[in-house]
Image (cartoon, rainbow, N blue to C red):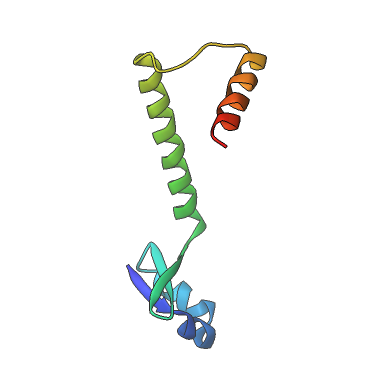
Length: 89
């Protein structure tokens, strides 16, 4: 992954990011020598969001197939979750 310092970003601006993104999917912005931000084009970001949804859906299917779920009314669900939150405090 390509790293750009915050100082370079200040002096060269977004044009430097656009240039780097022509060859890389992501650019890391470092601040005081430490990676702090990631910049990517919107298509890559949307792809990553879709990957998260697909992974969550796969996990949900596995949980249902493995019997790791509950059937309860909305009121029962709210009462259970509220109780769990209260017990955790």
